Image 1 (cartoon, rainbow, N blue to C red):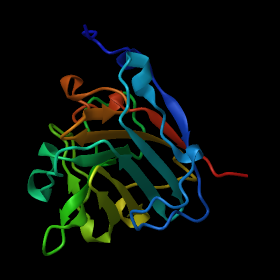
Image 2 (cartoon, helix red, strand yellow):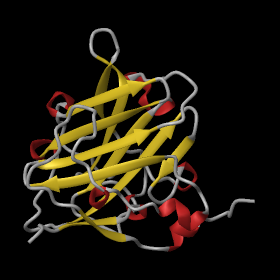
Image 3 (cartoon, helix red, strand yellow):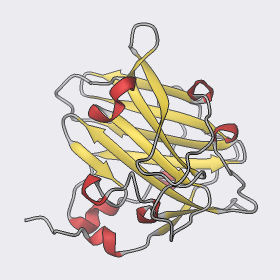
Image 4 (cartoon, rainbow, N blue to C red):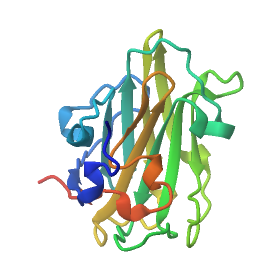
Length: 220
């Protein structure tokens, strides 16, 4: 029986976000990603096995993220218009890490990435920007066309990479604000959900105080 309140809900997590002087090439092949850039596998705290690896890193030009999903039996289901209903990776960021805020502010943004569903034929990777429910204030509008995304799809899964440039990150200022809120939700039509802390039942997409803190610290 699963716990009514997941163990992860009871903790405030903090971890360093890996710094890369040169960010990985965004081509879907996952070349250059290392274990140093893997995001914490916090699902183990709640005895929830994780079905995918998820990486992230940063430098002054922006933030990169990647994932690899295997063991799939069903075909990918990806539609940018209803991105939350199929296979997708979502990344949420609060550039002020305002842990007391229970509603998203203008410094909170949600990005989504799909292994397919983009391009004229719908067979390319796609990226977009989502909104938060009941936000106090929306972040300034930015064009998803500035986000670089690519994926490699196989019969049993896919690998995906994306780069969000600094111009798309409202309030991105690593020198003055090195602590940011960071959360991901990975949804899969075969495996279900994998997330950094809490799931849909505790409203991660409403309450940024439930996201862990990522520290942007340059490597020596």
